[in-house]
Length: 279
Length: 282
Image (cartoon, rainbow over all chains, first blue to last red; front, top):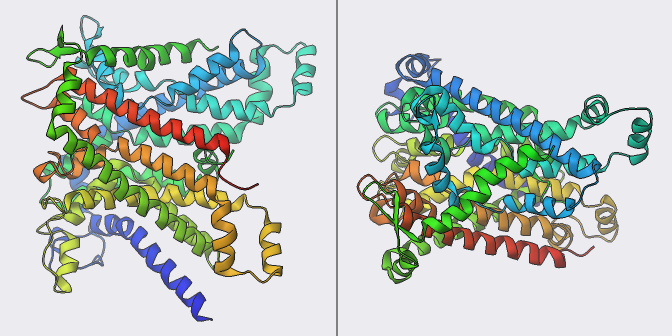
């Protein structure tokens, strides 16, 4: 091995350690007993498996309930964005209509509006709405609705699926239409099955983004049982500061779904994530 | 079929955009809700205030502290991975891992590490005889600590984008270079990096936009905008101005939101302006 290759490996390994260390630390810390994690000098290797932090996180905090909230919020947003994006992309690709290009331009324009600059009016609007005679966010169901409403559609999914649909051979579609295949049938039987990779890419991307949301859920849930997991773990950080193992256990639980996606769904998300980077 | 999207965009993006402008021209009552028309007063107040200049400066410093290390670090990693490394898949997955962490989970982990008394950062420094650092409590460190967390969060994405870019470089180019005797770092320096031009440019713009919008890590790591307001960026200030317990002011906060919008639109315009002219040499 030449000196150059040795340095290459050495730098890579160091960089990998720096990047992985927080990942290792959160897992190792979550199975350390309270005395060990805050010991000095620091002790980096767990002495066996201590499950007390997980028991504490699931029994003394609202994390279990918040998990349900997050799963609910994320699935509704993901499903809805898949449906609305397929419909819109279909219209943009296969239906001739007046002003199609202009409207698509406007759709893309919505992607340029940063959420932070429209969050205040959205907050005023949604907290001003009523459901069954009371403020929308006063009930559990209303809070869940408020969490998902602004994110039921997003132009990013429309953009990605349109790219994918555009590659569909027009002869094939013409043949299907001549055989009496209507819009819905064509979509369900042919277009969607043939575009599964693109749909997976959009689905996983939306799932990640929704699961990880912070700003909006911070404003919406007003008691522990109605908050999402992300807000839940950030508040653990405030109230359980003396008990880092318990906080880290909460974090580990919260990243399980996204970790699975990054490890097993990498090839799909790379496609969605880099859509803007590679023409 | 376009109706669902159009309704959602109109209700939650287009209309609020107009409403933001209108809010920024109104004063606020005791509860922060909009009341009387005040014209451009909020904008005049902002431009004249030293605090707002401080906020812009913190925002700018935060962008520099996150974008430069984030993009250069990822470039170094990707170039090293290109040197026909054994176990490249393991390294790839390792570098992609931070991508699984939300802003909340990453911030909470780093908050634990930065903990002044029992945190690991000071614990490890102590072993080497270095004095404790007030990672989040010292005004000269707080922004750096938040930036380190942000760089860690973003590095996985940056590596993914650059790896995909390298994958798209035609293999003949590298083969030709090897035949001409340009291997290893010479190839990286004169072929790979220039060919990655569009991806690097994309990452710089995207990371700048993301940093300008950074909120969760600041809110979680430095709940009050940091010691001596040292981590009070524009987005944090919008949140703080609108939802501060004692002085909620949606009008002034909306004026800041419009400033943010203009800055971000300028970034996007630069992106498209340059992309039109193409950054790479194909």
